Length: 552
Image (cartoon, rainbow, N blue to C red; front, side, top):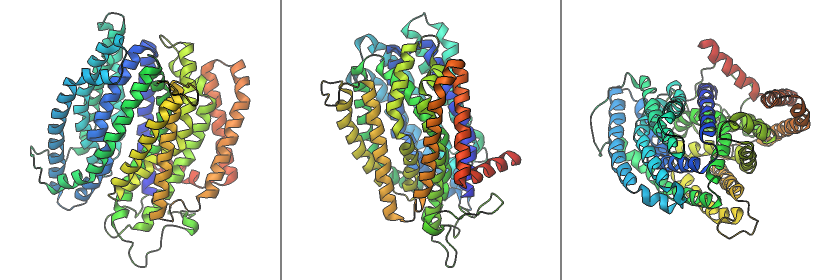
């Protein structure tokens, strides 16, 4: 558990830089282009590229590449690791070149199918083709990321997304002036996607400086065949997921030319705490879970799970742990204990973030985005959309953890099947909630209905995965009822305190100080309540951060 907490601290610090730069990127987009049809065109292009990336690369990292690379990283022969990384990279780049070329040719057909407004059709096609180029370089970055994770080297991947955002920001600020004023200048953002992908790959290469690249293409390599077997169910599920995303893009264009832009800015507020908390803990836990899922607990070794499935109340003073040290050191008890601890850590951090963002959503949106082309009306629309997105935050945070927990067991099929069912749930509920296509039994919520449908989809996915995990490992989450109740009480009181103080803060302070003062007040109230309620995970997290900083 200490290994997971320590790795999570590294990823957390990297994600802080990444998410801050991500917000700066959105700030630049808002100031230069606002929540307009041109921004919706860019969001469409970026989403198409993201779906190609998820289908061909991203889903494979956790589902197939990290588990496969981990086996070779632990082998005594280091040349075997270099060979499997090289073979996978070469095969992936060849497949990417073929698929992306075909998608670029089909871009006009795809954009027309998604229902983009005629005024923005040509612009969306141009942006889509630029965005697809970035996926090729993201493929290189993805393989390098998986290789670093397999070696439990988290520092280089932790900086990668920050470099990606930096490339987009630099291109937006430096290239926009090359176009005349108008919608066409947003092409600079698409070029930034390519530059950011290049930087994301380059910044991680030092992590593999001792791994020799081999120009080999061997489809019969055991690692390649195993990765394909693990990834096949994921691909099937992602195809259905892509249908859901296409449906979302179509409905968003029907809701209005600015709807997709508004939802994009609101989504970034949702993704900020998820990236800082859920991604850090999930990626840190994956190697340990993968090892624990594959080894039996040695006879006579005490379980790491305390009474009721809870982690032990005390832990060794030194951060290094026996968890994840290779064969013979881990087992199913460690799997349950690691996952339970990770769940508690996620909830500890995500619940106050949700409470604070819900109460302070409008001041936060105004602080981040309201300048230049992004006006007060856009702020109100974005804050309202975030309110409909926000109920999913704790569920979506746990969902990332549950997915990697199944991947660690070499089970890529279960999350995919659950994902297919929840995508169908979204496809069914989104039109009814948004009322964009004439079917409005719940009223015409427009873009807000799409946000609520997304929240329902992600929450249902997390609940189903948790139920399935509990069937496999009854100890997972055991004894967490009281812990969750204490966290929920602390977050609720924090939110009520912020709600009570917000009018006074808004009347006396400028908006930036409202956000700072509100955040500080919320943090003080939450931490004080955690101390009063004796939530011991706070002390473990703090000890890990201090230990990492001292070691650096």
